[in-house]
Image (tube, rainbow over the protein chains, first blue to last red):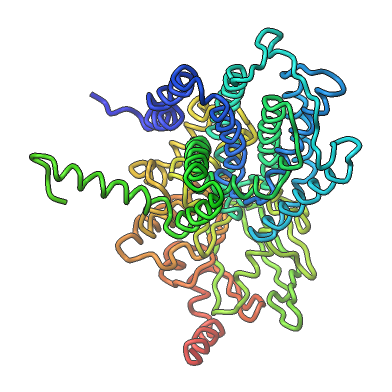
Length: 336
Length: 250
């Protein structure tokens, strides 16, 4: 008889926006099923899972807080070297290494966060780029510790949880990376739907309004920046542990730049963009490299230009138009 | 009547320009006080001084007897000083519900909760519901802020400022640019603000001022020209001259 009260309508609306959709469950089931469907592709699937985690990290600051970065590899590399060094000198237990990488990367994020709080997009791009270059050069010159240009060699990881040995086919690697990706994804999903996550989106959209509402932008941005750094560090640890090798490449500029491309392909501000982008990016890279082994960077570059200028809508719209045309050819189909 | 907001000899110089010149005025508890003056009279400078966007060259600002002259913007918000902006400052990507909910959770001190669930925050939900109802925004609560017409956006601007539960609310030209059809709804919600909120209205539009204000302060060239009841101010020859002067010189 009575219409539902406004309060219950609000509650419903808020619940709907955070509830898991069936598509999401399907998505993760498929990620698990991929283990059985593509037994010979597990190494690339592992790479995808790690890149996806790295992309989620950037999405946390870019999509939810509006902080651009061209140096996110700093945290990836920091976590990778941290996990690698821990395995070489202290303990080769993967979970310990993962935890260690998360803690030190978060600390690095916290320490460097004052540098990205002020200024505009351009200064942030330059500052993050600078920090990543600094770390790259440091890792290069501290050869005694990092192995310099030769990289960190001789890492032998213990089995995950003391039971699952890393194998050459990447079985353990993929399941381990996928499990870490899933757990960290669920945590990130919870955080972006929290009051904290809401205040971040308010800062992203209008810092003046957020501050006028009592939100302390500096603290909130420092918190999410450190959290994102922790996620990137975790991705770095997975990379170091599943390949049992860390090189300067982990800190290289192209890592940060590729990551931007991943989010440009997948979209920002909904977490899945990072995963979808990572899948698309890896397959594109693989496919193009198979077609033209020498010139794959050319095609990646061209795609970047198309995506940025045209936007995702052009590409997805194009796919949609083709699909409509095909449907219209079918009997009983409508003309476009 | 007790005084909630008081300025003493408030002066702000930008280089050689004196934007605010020895302004002393008081806002009483529960007041409906309008601040008027021709363009360039220093109204916005005064609002920026009061809210802490800029710091004064001289003088002091007190709120409920407390010296707030050097407090940050956020600290003043926590003390109960809220404002709306002349140009809407909204979070375009949020829904109306999220926008109000954001301000309410922040006021309740829940904004730092990393793992909190918005739909389980009973206190925030009931307060948000009351604000949406008061400003007649319940029917559009799931719409994105930037998809709504300008008058509605102006409502959200005022609702967001009101959501911090201010003791003092500064409304900077709330009706500016709102089309005639949407004006009534907006002015009604301004008129219906609860008694315990003291309101300082900065306005250009004399209809709005005389409809709403019980006391008027006139600023000209950064100085207080006069202050008094609406009918006295309306009859003041100096005020007429100031406005006529403006009209004549464009």
